[in-house]
Image (cartoon, rainbow, N blue to C red):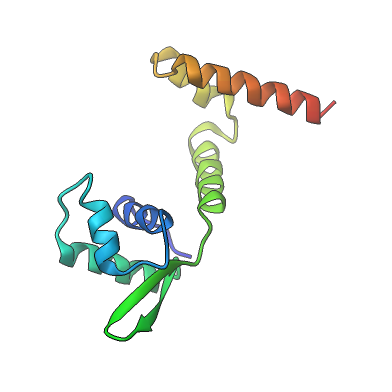
Length: 124
């Protein structure tokens, strides 16, 4: 699968909200938060089909789109790529960057503590 652009990811994310979905369904979901032109979204859907990230079934006069990649798997792969590319594979500098810029909320810190505690328990 080729790299997915930011705009393509937003379309894919809208599809992950529920599928199979028509182009109209996806357009409606995206236009809840952005004002995207219908033709732009259809172009992005076609790109995602060509990149084999999504596919469709033809149902009468419309297309029903569905993802070919799992959201959890995609997010894990992209997260790993980000950490590898920007932080030499180390997660701590990424978290430190958020901590120093005061971007971490109390909830983020609590979740990180919970994840670390679970990791320690699993790796004893």
